[in-house]
Image (cartoon, rainbow, N blue to C red; front, side, top):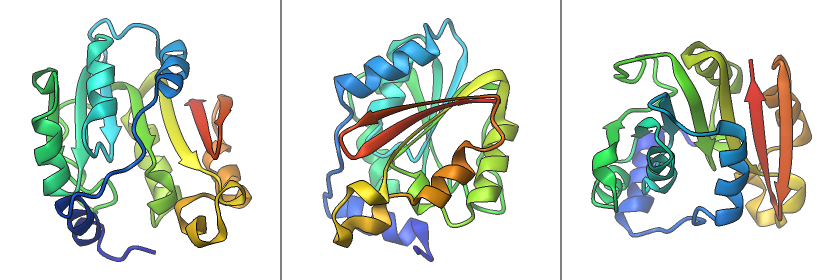
Length: 186
């Protein structure tokens, strides 16, 4: 488990590490779940290079991207259409909540983040508190059973999947190669 997320992720982003690019397949499935933004609020947790946050903004969401790595935020803020998104530095697991101006998010996303969360029950509770009634929590994560053994820590186990999906009013899952996309509604 990552003891100091800021130091860990900053080292990788600062070294130029690249992660799986956002795909048209992912955005198509997400767009079906969210519909148009119409000025509603969206929060992208672990926004990295900002691709997902910018996608949400292009769909009409007023989007905030949070990441704990300054180098990721610097990259995100220079990307295309970055003016449509507010990026801020925050560790969502910190005992101090991120500096979010508003808390009734229609959409909260966590793409390639959930497997690395230390206290998953606390994280899920925090996300539920950020969602507007009827909102959507969108999680994209590898499954441990579908990745090579040396990459197992980047995925979630069946027990972690059960924890993620329990307690939601509606759960939809879509598989994409070794990833599973979850659309969770309170």
